[in-house]
Image 1 (cartoon, rainbow, N blue to C red):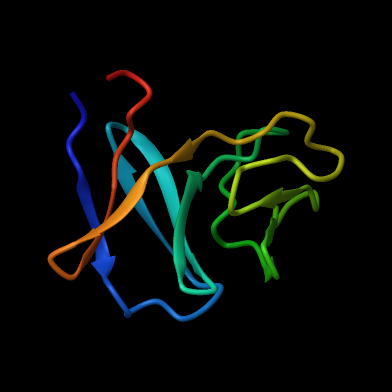
Image 2 (image 1 turned 60 degrees about the horizontal axis):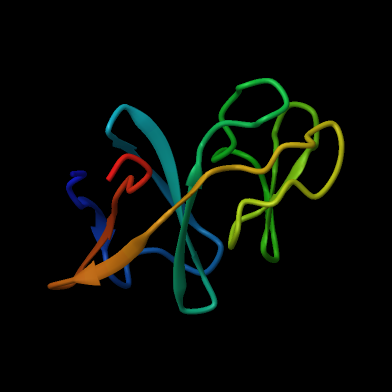
Length: 106
């Protein structure tokens, strides 16, 4: 069973910001958007590069290399050159800490 991993103190991220954390050897980008936390795998499904350094526009993260867009709320691929969605991960706030877990193998 996967453990919950601390990411950041609740309230530390501003709207549209993210923090990347290693969860069971998977790099996960945790975003704060409109009062909610969302977590997606930090890997573009087009070429395997990281996403977190890309620009955030609304609910979308833009891949810094080729411009693919993904929804930070649900991982959906929104435009070419990416066609595959990103895995998403559960988040929670526990005792003032934002946490994420990889529940795909539970």
